[in-house]
Structures are given as structure tokens and as C-alpha cells.
Image (cartoon, rainbow, N blue to C red; front, side):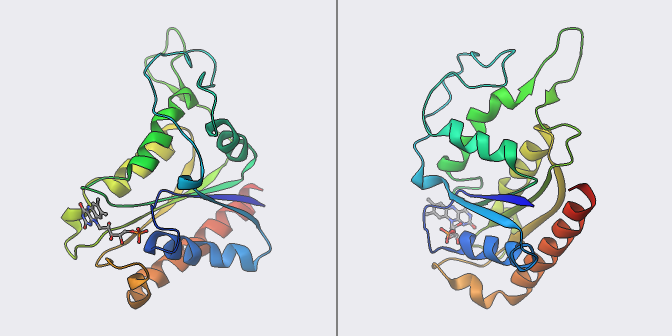
Length: 196
Ligand SMILES: Cc1cc2nc3c(=O)[nH]c(=O)nc-3n(C[C@H](O)[C@H](O)[C@H](O)COP(=O)(O)O)c2cc1C
């Protein structure tokens, strides 16, 4: 089983990374091969809206983005996670998502788009972190990640959130969130076993 985790945090040792680790724990224990991507290590320019990806599945801008898509193509499962920055995902995650516009296509004579990964049985867990205790302050971080994942054809088995996490590492005290994350990892593993 090949898994890719994509972390949109700006802090390598931050809460989002720790939340991802909890999700991945059951998968790593079962021997899955995990590639952990920290988006900040990659040069991903902003989508220019050129529509060059129309009818091609591919972005015409050449930078590190292509290597991430190759890993997504090969993956059986994807973990998508971001902290909340101003009620939404970080700009790193948003740039990555925008550049994925070619992963949906609008065939002629069809009212709806098709996702590159539709029907492939690729499984996904989405995850989000925020500082405030009130979930309203998470804004659309988690729903954006989940809607995006579904749009490109990933089968989202679970969505995990951790509230009340500010300083890097403070998620360690949010035991319930970490337990939820591990449970999501277990469901992720069960689905993967079904598909792979
Ligand atoms: C620029 C910026 C904007 C933020 N906006 C929000 C917000 O809208 N709501 C919230 O609850 N937390 C917000 N936070 C707090 C982060 O979501 C929180 O510190 C989180 O744990 C960061 O994850 P990390 O440890 O992976 O970096 C913001 C933090 C920064 C730096």
C-alpha cells in the first residue's frame, strides 16, 4: 500500500504534522509505504487561470507540482491536512489545490465534471487544526479539503479536526483529537485493504 500525506502547515514540527502522524500510525504499523510531503519544501507557483489544463489533466506550469501529482497518481491513499489560517487553509495548501484544476475535466455534452481519480478506489482522510475552541473559527478549512478531495475523485473515509491548538506541539494535550485521528487511520486502513 502506497500512502502520501500532504501537509500544508508552515511549521515542520507543528500541530498539523502531529495530527497526520496519528492518522498514519495504524498504516505504518501495518507496513504501508508512506511518503510524507511538507508543501513548504516544494516550489509551487500560483495558478494563473490560463486554462492550459483544459482537456489534458496536466498543468502547463513546470515546477515541483508535477512530482506531487506523480506521487498522487501512484498512491492508494492520500492524507490531506492543513492548519487554519484566517478561517481557511494556508496559502501553501491553497496554491497546491488551485494548481490541481487539471485534475477535473469538463467533457463536452456533460453537465458535470469528471475527476482524474473517479472510480479508482483511492482513499482519503482530510484533517484540519485551529487555535480557537469554537469550531466556527476553523472556517472552511476542513470542508474545503474534503470537497476538493471528492471533486478530484478521492473517496473520503473520514475528516478529523483538532481545535484549541496554538503553540507548536500543543496538540499533544488534545488527547481526544489524537485518538479520533488514530481511529480515522484505522478506518482508512480497512478501506485500503478492501480496495488494494
Ligand atoms: C496567519 C495565521 C492565521 C490564523 N488564523 C486562524 C483562524 O482563523 N482560526 C483559528 O482558530 N486559528 C488560526 N490560526 C492558528 C493556527 O491555526 C494554529 O496555531 C495551528 O495550530 C497551526 O498549525 P501548525 O502547528 O501545524 O502550524 C492562525 C495562525 C496564523 C499564523
